[in-house]
Length: 461
Ligand code: IFM
Image (tube, rainbow, N blue to C red):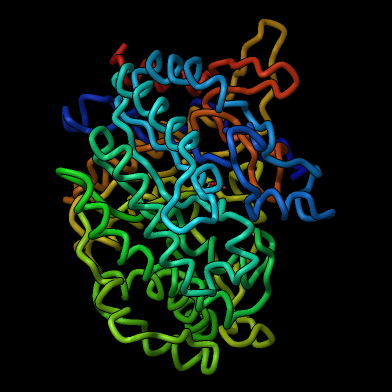
């Protein structure tokens, strides 16, 4: 993005009234989310093995700034400071993910004790600061050894994941009640294995759809194991979704949007809610359909305790006859407010999306498990980061969330993405999503003005 002006939005132009904490239920969860590979660093410590993101990032051209997560925010060593900041903001929940490569030893059922101990300390650190821990088991850092054996395309990875879930919930289940099996299966499957710009970098639709299927099966098989190990467990998945708009009112663009929706939304949600894969999408993909073993669809449809929704922006879809098999293309955003990722700022999309999910599936309690924005932050002469646009983004999305709740959507919590600036995957460190600025040279943390606004909101100042 070179159009800095398009990121500007005058304070006075905010359309929605600023929400107040008192507009939400007193037991509403207010959190921030992070993920292991993006913040932890300590890539070669305490027995951590190579992940697919270590391998991918080491491949020239895969990550824009040539960086990797080996040091990242050094959260592995600096977590007490990070949790002090989270406590100071006034959060009552914190969503983190567990790096499978810290636990995986390659020996069936034998987890790495040092990895288990790290997450045990981490969880104690959260609880000491009043942060309810929300653990995500898989946020994209698959051990490379498992990828070498076929990765998520190989059903053996399902069993390995269940072992991992078992080890983690035995270790943390006395203190961690909220478990997210997978973060954004779309990204794991489609971006990583069809579009190919995330690890492991495959570009096969057949592979991607088998990966998607096996990931869903692993969710279904891990859920009862988590419940068996964790008294009062609350288990769910975090799914990234977009409200869709057709590029025009033409029947072609409308039909393209429907085809895209079949893969982007229904391919994942229909089976999770017991409806199987959508027939229209099966018809389009033909031989690329995944192999389904007896019992898989029942496993996938396991009843969960909540649904996590990650929302960033709506997608505009146009007919694209050359793009087989879906013949649909997501258009880049060229006008209006845009973040540094090139994503449109559309707060109303959050309420729209949550309302659609509620109407389509009635999933029970929902949590916004991610929502946030990247902007080109700078530290001023006073050491402040005056990220006006992120503050506006946060405020306006909370107003939209309130709209959804007022309309009867049972949302029980909100996790801002992200607590810290971090490794933004293929963008490396070029994009900053944090409420806390990280100076990657010194590892200095600075609460941005958006974080200060969130603090004032939570303290009702
Ligand atoms: O940074 C990512 C996160 O890992 C998953 N959801 C979207 C975020 C922003 O791209």
